[in-house]
Length: 329
Ligand code: UT7
Image (tube, rainbow, N blue to C red; front, side):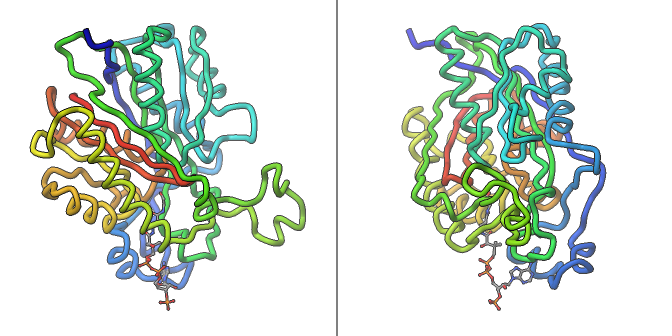
């Protein structure tokens, strides 16, 4: 008999109130709504309030996912937070979220896999639930990327946004679907395509690192684009192969929402028509580890995700990392 699969029991998301439009950005850097929409598809993004950190956004999304699962805080036995914009170098952001939500029966830790963080978390949760070690895992992707952006660098500051998305996972009964296949991958030789060089043990914070602008999000956009498209298409095909399903069986493709051009390219390479692709990058920008659970939450709210649907998720991010998960909703 096949081992127990993990299934999503509940889902939720949270985006801060403030919206920053392309027209707002036109007043801040030398850019245009036309350029941003043409190259990325993005029109606006949400920005955290001054007193909101990643754990605050993650807490809101986590609370919604627990309620959606029909559970209470006491039921959660593990909390995993995926973030590249944690509240502090340590402790883990998950520990702040644990305290906020009162998850007194849970162990809590973070994973750092960039924009692939949520899919790394699903992969981990599948293994932990299959092994029987945990029964109710809260997985949250939460980011306040706006705090890492150089608001004088038009090549990066127009791309990202702040949000959080969460799921609760538990064992699936045999007829309930759940995670059918999941793969993760990385290539550390490309680590410096997308990074924040300052603030860690390599370049600890100093007047010099501030003067040298080392605490900002830095990216080689063209190279990242190339690797993203190549790796995502390949790993998406691999999970389909693992599951024994074909592309025709996929009801909804939910890719990491980084750039509409990348999403369109992936859909084309996979041969999935755009009607089957969920996109909301237009309204949120790239929210890194929050992007897939945020998109899933919206897709369900809008009636695009129904019980029994086969959903293919695929992402890439800093590391480089990439991954794909196929599940039956
Ligand atoms: O989750 C991982 C996140 N990373 C990504 O998803 C990034 C993947 N890469 C991309 O999405 C694209 O590479 C970008 C959207 C970042 C850039 O698009 P591109 O078509 O690769 O543009 P480019 O970097 O080659 O720049 C083209 C031109 C340059 O001007 P010149 O040198 O041709 O005169 C840039 O200076 O566009 C200029 N440019 C801008 N112009 C207006 C760059 N940013 C802007 C801007 N507004 N915001």
